[in-house]
Amino acid sequence: MSAYADSVQDLIDAFARLPGIGPKSAQRIAFHLLKAEPEESRNLASAVTAARERTRFCERCFNISEETLCSICVDPKRDSDLLCVVEEPRDVVAVERTLEFRGRYHVLGGAIDHLQGVGPEQLRIKELLARVGPEETREVVICTNPNLEGEATALYLNRVLDVPGLIVSQIASGLPVGGDLEYADELTLGRALTGRRLIQGEST
Amino acid sequence: MSLYREVAVVLRTYKLAEADRIVVLLTREKGKVRAVAKGVRRTGSKFGSRLEPGSHVELQLRESRGDLELVTQAETVEPHVKSRSDLTRLGHSAALLEAVDQLSQVGKPDPRLHDMLVGGLRVIEDRDPPLVVAAFYLRLLAHEGVSPELDRCVGCGQVVERLYWAPEVGGVRCGPCGGGRNVSPESLSVTRATLGGGLNAVLDLPDSSKTHDVESLASEMLELHIERRLKALRVIHNS
Image 1: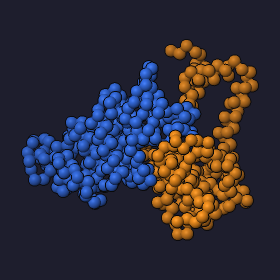
Image 2 (image 1 turned 90 degrees about the vertical axis):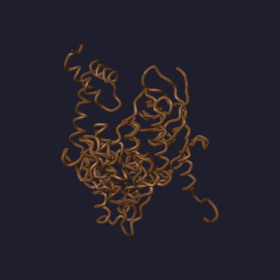
Image 3 (image 1 turned 30 degrees about the horizontal axis):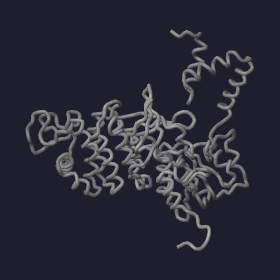
Image 4 (image 1 turned 60 degrees about the vertical axis):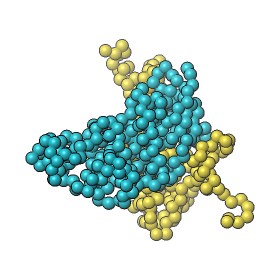
């Protein structure tokens, strides 16, 4: 039997189910809310409810949106023939923060993961293939995470995006700015060398 | 808490907190070890790609009172560059890692299993033959002491011309004893060669319906042994 009142235990259990929150953190958050002004709890509850009720996936790119199409998909200033493929909606935010990309996005909803049994049929790859032709896409930029699952997804996309006239590129992989060369692992340094950039003279 | 060094293969990883990961390692001397790699998900992490599944690494670990050690240093032993840039190799490596993860146990050192995995990953990196996963599964079953019986009926022990595949009883069975699934004599002979002295010849076989058949025999047998479905193979077949 729990030492807490049922409603308090339910609240702790609800927080403990969230990613990255263990039982101790769940207790701390629950007791913070119980000690704080009732207004704080009401605001939290209404923010969760509103976000859940108002948001949905954009019907075109599967980013999170409050409308049928997200703000990026309806923006006429965006390059409609340039498509950046990412794993999750938060990756859209990461790319947007660079201010370097002016095309549109396609959110796969995950990555191929052999060890977790996530295959291509569980991702929005069919939807991506269905977009490329009708939207007259000129280039698809594969922007998956530089880990094993992201690499597997990029390799699979490269295999299936075999469309005449379509350019398929992948974001560069290499050394992080501010890091030391001596600490770079072989794979990262090898890729940085393979993808080196010409700064003077002609390529041999 | 003391520091120690170990050679290991990373079997799998789990996200932990903001930027950390729990890495599941198959070490040579200590068996399966779970350790925390702090900050490994940050792009500037000193570990880089060294703690990705399939990496063969030499690690410095800090012992802890609980069941999670701490990774303090990591150096690559063998870089598997081709296995990271080819989808088939990547899938085959994952199939090996998944099987070993299911069979290895914390606190039970098994240097032979570690060496088998290192050898299997090396074969995938070097030439990636079609039967590499099936051969590894069959050798793994032999290592566990549960090789399938392929020469005589499991039920009556008779050597008969027509034998059927019945993994639930541990091998082949004759018609009168209950039979099983049809399997070609060629597939049975490749399976025998894998478990006998013909591994190199088996690994030279080109992709064919026979190699698919052998892969299905080996995976069925292993799934029955570990009592769960192998996820990596299903993804390989769908991609």
